[in-house]
Image (cartoon, rainbow, N blue to C red; front, side):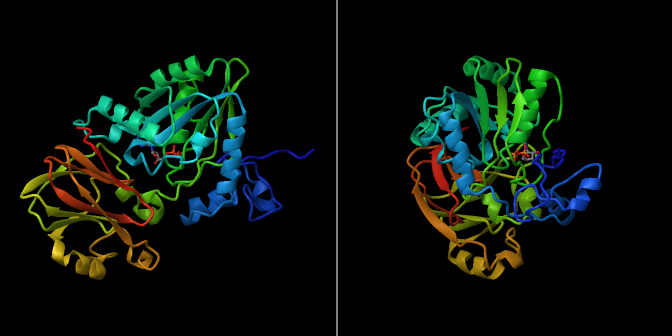
Length: 367
Ligand code: GDP
């Protein structure tokens, strides 16, 4: 019988027959000690993300399978990109299965954010999006914060069943599972994490002590994520690496802020006021006059207003304008996947611009 090889990069089963399908590696690669699939090879050597055949259809199949099994579902979202990393279809498939919602990357939040407010907001938002989790957690998979609590909850709610871990790409699902494994089995780094979205492939089953399994499902690419409109070299610019440092802007009405060339904020009316920006410390904030903003974007998106890069401008989606009137003091305007601006006073009229397909929304401030 033929020996079964797996890719050391993503864990997919290696096959040598169909170059366009998942897990392909040329025959010659099998001679090597560490076998890597073509997709991971390209990623590693050419920094190039290959389209794979984990289509939306494949993902629906996985959701269907989850819906039909009697299991606990652990859904992971990136709290810095809550709406962008939400899996919109999931609630239609869960059936009677219980769900734990885990917000990851809590280490990136500024100290001023009140975590119980964020948890409450996540609960309300989930309900509106059609999902009723048993409990909501905030964790840092990278730093290991609150992992013990989640591991205990998983054990409590699974009632001897399998556990499916779901989440879209780049939410930190692999990092989270590795942490849980350390907690459960004492081992480290069983799954490879990657610096690029979309690299966890295939279903990985991790045996639990009672013969059941923790199942890592592939992360689906969520087309609403800002990350997909950014060149992979610029991901590090928009993705905070460290705790976000709030930046305060005193604005007069008629002033505009650009966040690179990825988003724009217009302060339309309300008198001189302060706006607290919560974005990756690397992102360039450019202040200008509202009346000049369109022209500035036309002429400088891709250079002074970057990312996106110049060579991307042909395909970069247009910025779409969303107007909001701030009804309550301390309201956040959220640019999904990029950050948010806290508006301190009620009555302000503002507009948020995001690439077509990306969400812009308001919420009660988390501070
Ligand atoms: P997956 O695609 O969902 O499996 O995500 P990964 O586990 O590969 O993580 C995606 C990116 O998020 C990587 O750059 C990780 O270093 C980063 N990451 C994961 N967990 C955390 C976290 O708790 N905090 C921070 N700041 N970054 C994280």
